Amino acid sequence: MITIAKFAAAAALVLGASLLLTGGFARYKSWRSLSPAHVLTATQWYIANRARQANDVTAVCVYVLDCSDDRARLAIVPAPDQYDFRALRQLIWVRRFKGRCQGYTANLGLHILRRPDNDRYAGSDQAIWSFNNDRFIPSSGNWSGGAFSEEPWERCTIDRAAYEVQGSQLVGKGN
Image 1 (cartoon, one colour):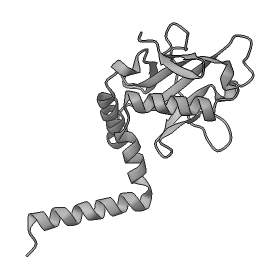
Image 2 (spheres, rainbow, N blue to C red; image 1 turned 120 degrees about the vertical axis):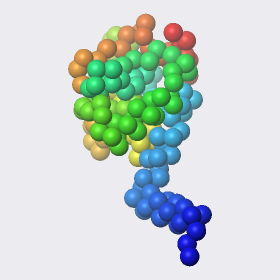
Image 3 (cartoon, helix red, strand yellow; image 1 turned 30 degrees about the vertical axis):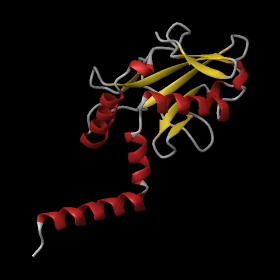
Image 4 (cartoon, rainbow, N blue to C red; image 1 turned 90 degrees about the vertical axis):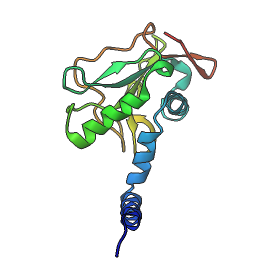
């Protein structure tokens, strides 16, 4: 006779195996690890490795999913270290599995500001979170892409940026 404990163990094993085989475990781990520190690390990686002409970057805005009007869009978070990422994870979960907050919008995004004299690499200036890669990827370009945000979305300005570039480091502005 199968006990509840054996059934639960078997169900967990089947769920774990299916997540592993479908690549879902990596996406789940990425979703679960969303935090201010993880976003900062991923932002630093993106600027160093994916943003063209990184030495022209002056500031970065961080955007998170907003469903206040039942339609998905991105909203600026001026101080990610003070943002409730647990609530964001819950919102992403509900959006994915319960079909709420629909729209062609990423769950998390970046917008890079450059020195005014350089708009040559605008294609890498917007990035979206990829749960498959556990980091930001360009919202346009070869082998990447996805919707950044439906309108209306607030444009990034130096006053609303979460991070400024000082030397080669991102520094939180603490807005």
